[in-house]
Image (cartoon, rainbow, N blue to C red):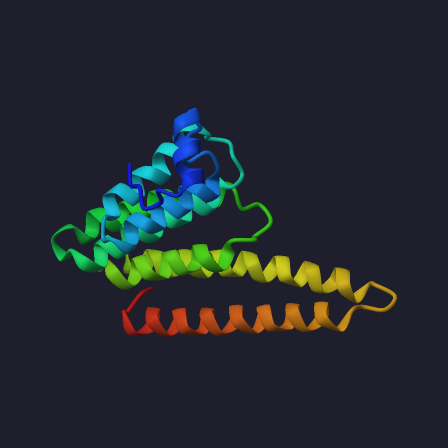
Length: 187
């Protein structure tokens, strides 16, 4: 266990027997501490252990995305194990997808796919396509949201502007991915 906090409260909590990682936020902080120290395997393990202990927790999507991102960091730093780490990143991206019925995490999930494609020659075209599929789904959801707001008697200008900004961002990312597909000679 990584202990950077020996405050009176932390010592008391450990003494009473409360688990130091008793919430998803605690686990995320532990993962960040490990990551900052370059201890990626321990950070990954902390996230995986939590999700195995609480497999149906809705907040697991964040942990799965964090685990996926950590595998991508490892892949970028260790060319010997790049393909293996990218595959693991995609396993946890797919687990995060289960928790994303409303497209709330679409940008992060698409970024994971794009990064996997950037790092892996074997996965490049497939992951660029996957990122575009995720963003296409997000575009549909944004279109539905735009229609819902348009049906309001007096739509709030902030809602209209947010949806337009999100739609523009999705379009820009899709265009970037299409450019990468073209440069990589993807079919």
